[in-house]
Length: 230
Image (cartoon, one colour):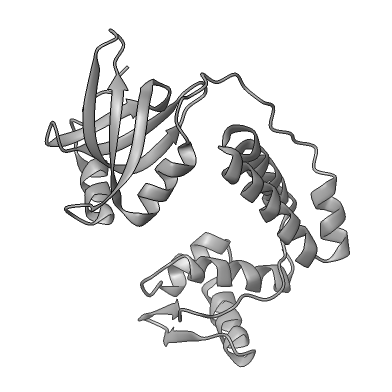
């Protein structure tokens, strides 16, 4: 790893941490010595990077700092192409367009050698069969972003239909099905629903009773999350 690659990697690590990170942790993440970390921090600060902290207390990158021109390792380019290709194949129409746009924007700002590498990645996301759904998944994503409740008609595996009002938390993309994790007002508990079994859906203007981040935290830590409504 060259020094410029190491400095960029150090910025990336700091960018992903909200709290001060010790030099020893940074050294472990980058597989370098403490002395190298101290030198690299000083070098970045000398170039204008908004890094605050000191030895023994840790370092943090202040919000709003812009990273230098994009540089990627070969594996990172492969991950980008494969990941965006997967989204383009499996996402709803607006999400698929967004995935292709992301790659185009990244290609536009890459140096020529890396742009050639991006175009020549030997990995490809292959379309997989999915059960067609009856609803617009983009509407679900919008409700998640806006933290608005959904009113839906759902058919279970036995053909029974129920009307639910739910707080949508996240969409799980499985091999052959999409699953919506929610807080269900009817049950007063977390419930998961196969999106292909949602018969009708509309987004309400009713906000979540509690912030999504709080519900998500509870959903993740709950040990007995109800099984998927298969």
